[in-house]
Image (cartoon, rainbow, N blue to C red; front, side):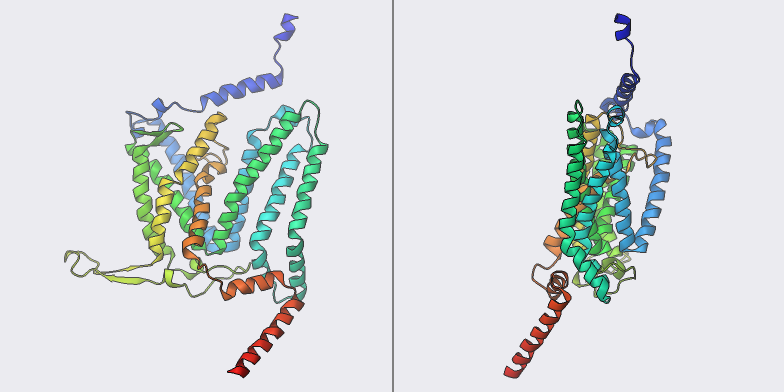
Amino acid sequence: MQKKDNIATPSTLARIRHRRRSTEVIPEAGKANGSHLLVDDHNKYRSMLIRLYSTLWMIGGFAFIVYMGHLYITAMVVVIQIFMAQELFSLLRKTHEDSHLPGFRQLNWHFFFTAMLFVYGRLLSQRLVNTVTSDKFLYQLVNSFIKYHMVACYFLYIAGFMWFILTLKKKMYKYQFGQYAWTHMILIVVFTQSSFTVANIFEGIFWFLLPASLIVINDIFAYIFGFFFGRTPLIKLSPKKTWEGFIGASVTTIISAFVLANVLGRYQWLTCPRKDLSTGWLHCDPGPLFKPEHFTLQGRVPQWFPWKEISVLPVQWHALWLGLFASIIAPFGGFFASGFKRAFKIKDFGDSIPGHGGMTDRMDCQMVMAVFAYIYHHTFIVPQSISVEMILDQILTNLSFEEQQALLVKLGQIMQERLGYS
């Protein structure tokens, strides 16, 4: 009897191996930094090279997608979302329990794509209307989609809810309800970030590219300064983070924000908002934020100084606030992710990017930054008064074709009456 009790099942052995592996991946703070420079650890050079190659590939691919335009950037965001959801769905899954619940993983993805339809349907509905305005049939079809969009998403969610209830199994209630709650938590985290990101893209690629680039710059220079000069631990949640890396990256990020805004702000296809879902290059009036102001330095700088006049875009002063947030506040998204990983005793969320971990590991700070960029843009940049474009958007979205014709006739009558009085 005693011998039988000592026999370990395959699932028990798997859990023991998982616990042993999990407890070994988190390095201790004292070994990561402290009185020793990371540059003195020769084992770090190999990981640095792997990280460098992956970074170059990511930057090259990212630059190509940005060059292609708004729709391709949005498609990239969708792909990143799917990778993040896959990594987070897998985090709390247990193979033994899942084997007794056929179709339970598909339920998670049902909720995911329902949320995707809801979020992107609301964000892109007006752009979709503007794209098909010239075709009466497509215009009516899109209007019907917009009208019943929320109802369709609601019943898709209810279908998933009923699916979940019907699949409940005895002795597995706790696991199933835990997965149900975890799925909804993932949807909140992933789609909160993505909705603000896509909104920034269509307000002008500039408002997506600049914040995203600042996070990348901050991350790269925090690693470089920490690698070569890091001595003082910054926070216990991230043993490899140092004050030297944090301060060096902060200064570099703020300077980069000012310079990069000047470079990006001179291209109309980056600064113009996209009002439809076409793929052509944009041309528009850039507005006062992107029109250069010239400052004379004559008499304020030494004679040997090469520049006697500088050109500054007003948006560069706003970029300083974005740079400050990216260097001081956004890293706390990474600290949060580090604490989360330590809680679950894992090193990375995944291994899809060599040297960097999973997609979620790269998006932790981007999530915080995207929300701030959107709020800052709509609070300090977008005019708060009602404009002709805003009213036109409401008319095209909420009125049928016949109602729009009636409105046009009514406006014509009002204008004729006013011209008669004058």
